[in-house]
Image (spheres, rainbow, N blue to C red):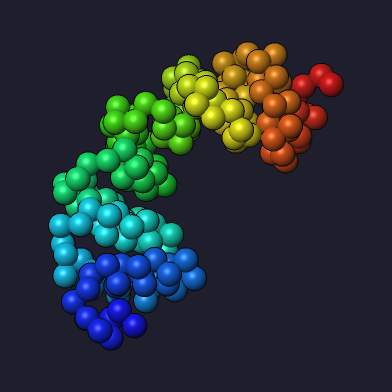
Length: 189
């Protein structure tokens, strides 16, 4: 209805894009995100959400370009974190860490950024750094079993098996199936 009344109403295109995206109709979402941006190219949220949509569709390069533009307009912890995630999926772990550093600088409580930066550190074999980030992430949100599981893996890498098994138990309590398997294989029950 809003678009039939005013086809220059950028927020209507943006909101409809979100609806299309939530339905998995990425092509229609892209069309509306692009129209919203054509009408208001300085809205950082439009760029950021289009980046998320590109990420969901698997086009990480376009996602990163959108996050770049969003950051240029209005830097935020969540956009740095989203770009870091896209970079990590492209296995550009060092660049992802740079973005997660900025995300954490802007929001030190961001347990998701801390967790994802820890994953990048693990991928690079920097297990002590990973454990530090996983621990901070847990301090900010102790209900994410994946963080305990990831920290357990890092502990195993540095031969801290007792700590790893303790984290696996917590991950099991939080319903992480992989933790049960690894615990059965690696821990004394």
